[in-house]
Amino acid sequence: MAIGHISKVSRFGIQRKMVAEMTSQSWKNIPHVSYIYDPDVTNFIEAYKEFNASLPEGKHVTLNTVILKAICEALKAAPQMNAHIRFEKRLVRGKITQFENIDVSMPWILPDGSMMTITMTDMGNRSLGNMTEYMAETAKKLEKTNLTQAMYSVSMNDTMEELRKGKFISVAFRLIGSKTQKRHRVTPLTGEAKKQYDAIPDEEKITKKDLKQGTITISNIGSITRGIEGSIAMLMVIPPQICAIGISAVQKKPVVKADENGNDVIATASVLPLNICFDHRALDFGDIKPFLVKLEDIFDHPEQIFVY
Image 1 (cartoon, helix red, strand yellow):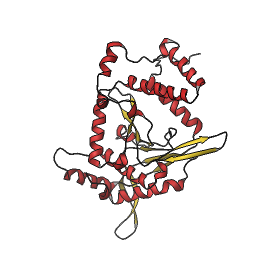
Image 2 (cartoon, rainbow, N blue to C red):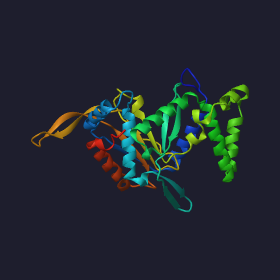
Image 3 (cartoon, rainbow, N blue to C red):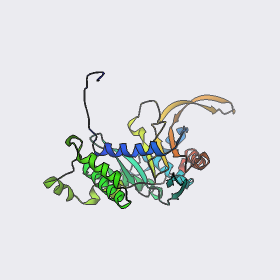
Image 4 (cartoon, rainbow, N blue to C red):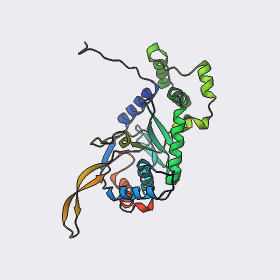
């Protein structure tokens, strides 16, 4: 029995279906541990402003890009966070595979308000200037991308991969869910519309290679919550990744600092809440500590990353 008047019913599109499937697997299979880190970035932001002002005319680096650079540099100090896990529950055995390249799975907000997670490759070896160019190129590609078509190609690829692994039952249920009942179907482009979309060169749009699984997820919640108090407290770790990092908006908060005489005083500071969520099957707090120590060093000595 309905408890009120229904205002709207929305069926899952392909993007919502894929998010629901991945996050359901995450909560079902992964023992999550979440740690909130609140560094004082007052001096870091001042150094960032000075760095930006020193760049040639026409050059600019966003604060989001600088924070992403800092996180990638800190991950180099804790390479065990940049890894995938394979665990066989019945046999109680598993393995962890670390990666040299830091390929970041990063959610992007599209012009229509929907979300797509893009894999930004080799972010650990990119300079601030190269990161800036890469992000701008990705934004341009998104303008020409049909979300449903891109996600459909990924879904078909995943289905074929499951068939190769012999997961016939799960594939059968997926096909039943996608083909039965017209209102639940996902409809990719067809006819002339598909022909026109296929004519767009792959380097000018998002393709399935841009949507492949990254080595770690970094989600910048702060880009859409500026001016709102609060911070992200939990993220889903998407298998087979073992770590996800959430960036909240920089906020003014009271902190305890030492004055010129070494006495503790309360002062106002810019604080950057970061959430580090990890798979406890693969990582312990001791594995996270080198990452935090390196971030502290970067925020205290920001000149080490301010190279365009």
